[in-house]
Image (cartoon, rainbow, N blue to C red; front, side, top):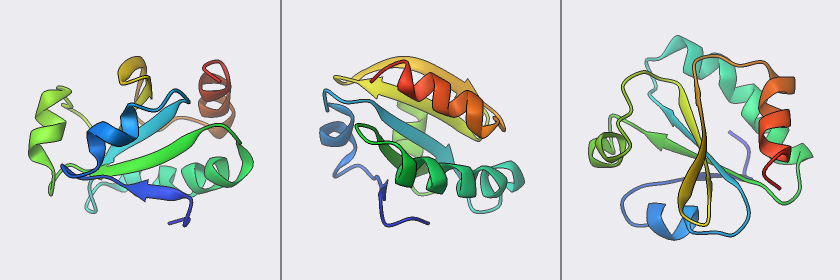
Length: 106
């Protein structure tokens, strides 16, 4: 995982998503195959895009956060801006599509 990707938990989640810049939060689990497949794409986007923060929430370790946002399938990615969900992406998504969704919110 890129050093530009934050690992979120109950201690830092709310403060991180409150940013005025877009924050893509990847809800994932270590046993999830599609989650593993999308991880390198998120690493690339974290390095390529300025003005966007990418973060991850392990749903097994942070069940309360996953429940609060009604995460029913993984990977689910939520894009937050100013603490509000502005976009939801469920499942494996091509890099170009993710990049377009993120840059639309910059």
